[in-house]
Image (cartoon, rainbow, N blue to C red):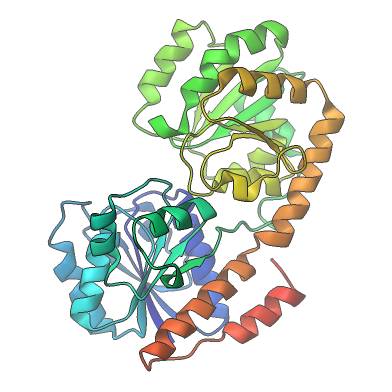
Length: 381
């Protein structure tokens, strides 16, 4: 089977990482993948995907000419189906281009944000199937009028061989960021954008520091709010206790060194950072937003607090930092759950089943989904 994947994101954030996982695993099952991605973006620059790579200008929601560019690629590549992975215009224009090229299409929706029902029905009409990465997104699609039988729920995945416990990671973190040896390291891994709610943690951090002065908050990521967050750190006198650590390509080597991860986002499709930290056996405290509740079970594989409730966040974090045994218990349970439910092969096998259904309905190619499912059961990543 030949599949054209469309990923319009310019940065190697969670969605792009999921595309790379899927390309690698599905190619093992015999899928001939072609990746169409944003020209000059990080995904194109990586060039380590298990796919032929075609770069196209992709300028966002108002790039109407993207329809024509994508349709020409599809006519040239002659795929059995097209899989659209992201927003920034691709979810709208990718479906139209597939319809123009006469190619069946599916779209993965990763964003926890409601859409007006008339608009959603129009936008998703060209797609044979829609994939929701969480129950929250699936419910939003149904409320918008998408027929439930057109929706498949396939959660995001993490590679527990890449994101794994590492006793040397703490030393690397301390040395890289020049932190005190007795520091309690709390990470936030997220784009610096409003919905990730870094400000909620910064607002309660003075009280946390007063009660536990060893705490150090490390914010990994980049985004348009970097200057604003630096200003807030300075206004609150937190320069010693909070650090914008930037976007790190070596995050798998650093993440296991944290004592805890905080994820205060008020909207979240699923939470790849939550999966990654859990896979590293790092305990997670997260707002119970969107698909996060599909990943964490409160007091078993993590701690959940009500969205935007700073007092509950502070209480949970202080309690966790005071109890190394509880941190260890939650981290171990979380890693076991990730290995059981969120493996890469399991995700790829589920997608291949959807590919098979879509392609069969249109009389097109077949996949190796059965073979991959067997490999997933016998040798998970």
